[in-house]
Image 1: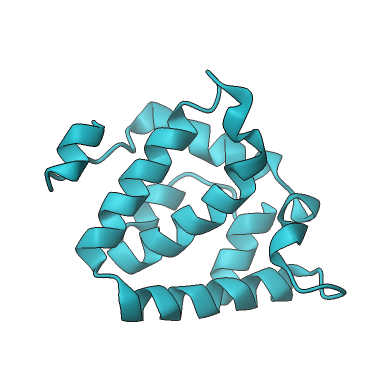
Image 2: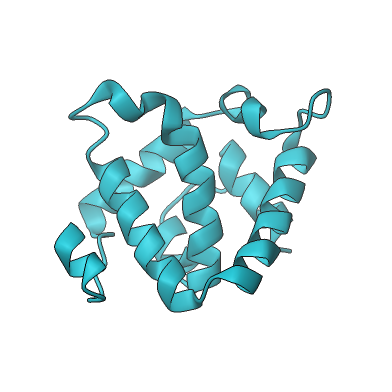
Length: 131
């Protein structure tokens, strides 16, 4: 998989089983897991949504949609293996935020969010960031 991505080949890692695993991760992590990303004293849905909005704009200006698709594939590969190693547990909330940002830029949010509950914290923040 990594070799295919590095060689520029398209790799869509979001099959139905990995999609449900990712959606499960979206539901596991609530606001307190994302506090490290928010400005001190401004811990709310709006803070994370504002951060995501800024990062989407920044990403659009710096990275192509094709490149962000590759980044998304790499993140999905990492998240798909999170149950085999506890080494990335602390990184999962950040990877979830990044996955939504690069999915947005690459045009793959429908693929990423298909079947997700719109009431989970990170999906609400993403919806607010992109409205």
